[in-house]
Image (spheres, rainbow over the protein chains, first blue to last red):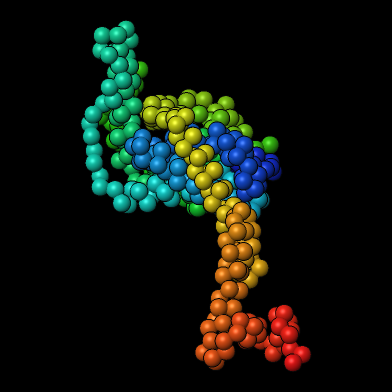
Length: 197
Length: 160
């Protein structure tokens, strides 16, 4: 078996965002709107997994797009995908926030449903599971969390994820493997509930 | 034809990328499928062992972007574009002409007023100076103000 170099689904393809970025550099509102609709949810979701906080996730997403507006005219197509660069900006913004953050943990479960409504029990169980998983992810070191977020939750190719994290594919794989081990260890106490589903 | 994958390599990929082989790197998938055909029980056990982590990751909360956030971000783009427009406007040239007839401000009157004030200031200054020389006639004063000894310019008969 040849040593794998990592998949890159977009290798050889044109960066779908290049034209948009050039139009944004020219001040086109429609291009900005298109870029936001393409990537805002991804940025919010990534930041949420990194920070475990919905409000901070939105702040990070705003920071990313501010950076896009400021840097669009400097963008040089061909070096890396624009989306990869956006992920890198988001991850670095999350790292900054994690460094500044005073860790506050809460065991509160989101109150998503009235207990008397049909299916409420199921919704509560799902909310509990979701919270447990988020807690487990938040207990991982930030770099492992970033690797898992990009590859498993964002389903990014390993090469793109490695670029976004500015590491080699081998280093990414090491982070992924350790992250998965850490997640399993943390969730061990809840494994029965998870597997019952 | 792909080279044979070892058990150790298959396990490493399971523990790194999880139980869904279709999400493994493309360049190892052919070898992985061949391994699964030659070692079906072992491959299944290895993949099953990672399924709990995959299931857990699938439960991770997903956060969608609110429309209000999208609107805020687009507003920031407009603000940025407007500030760039202001910054890239050509710098104003500070010349006497611009000072007297400022462009794009719709206020040429104050430039004209300033010009008239300057003219009358000079005239007034010279007039005052003329009085200090004890010249009493208006013609003398004006001639001093405008720097001429030819009184005929001011309508005075100088033939005598």
